[in-house]
Amino acid sequence: MGKFERVLALPPERIPEHVAIILDGNGRWAERSHRLRAQGHHAGADNVETITYACMDMGIRYLTVYAFSTENWKRSKDEVSYLMLLLKQYLLKYKKTAIAKKIRVRVIGDLSGLSEDLRELVLDVEEATKDLTAFNLTFAINYGGRDELVRAVRGLVHDGVSEEEITENKISGSLDTAELPDPDLLIRTGGELRISNFLLWQCAYSEFYFTDILWPDFGEPDLENAILDYAGRERRFGGRKK
Ligand code: FPP
Image (tube, rainbow, N blue to C red):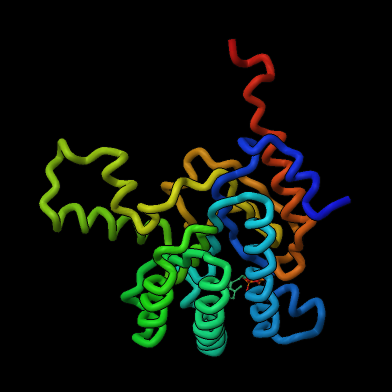
């Protein structure tokens, strides 16, 4: 069977336009294989690249990954520094591969909480890829859904927006994700059954897919299974419509 044949055989409207993923389980993956947590994160970061290309091959247009939450600062100093280092290394690497593959890279989250060098790198990668349209890859870094809403509301107040002008569209357009469609499918690896402050507003109508597979082990066939599961849920003609 050809690569992704089962997904590619689906009617295009059954393939999600935007997939968001909570990358969980790097630490447990490392423990299970008697490696350091840092090695788990490294394997997890490598897997983002694999899954990005798989999404592109399947006809998905947007992938958003939760790389570092506003709560992740509570981890040990060593782990936080390692994650920051990885983010820098990978953003640098992604700048090259994204340009080669025409991927637009964005970062959502509170950039003001990042170190100056990481923030500059983020702005640089976003600028270098802003006209690319083959795919949209978004990293959530120092991101929290509540924090994003607070920043959006503060922005509206700051701009003097009046009570009558506040609409759902106005709020959506003030979020970090203003340029992205809402996720059709939210995947969480690593066995936990919660949303952990990710894309709270945007996931109002998303389909959720939870799997026990740890993120570094979540491979192409697992993504395929998630997409097929999603495709099976959207039963628009199952007797419910007149
Ligand atoms: C969850 O695993 C993962 C994270 C907190 C960070 C995700 C970060 C990466 C994959 C590396 C950097 C990312 C990119 C995109 C370059 P966990 O540590 O909570 O795992 P555990 O629950 O098993 O301990």
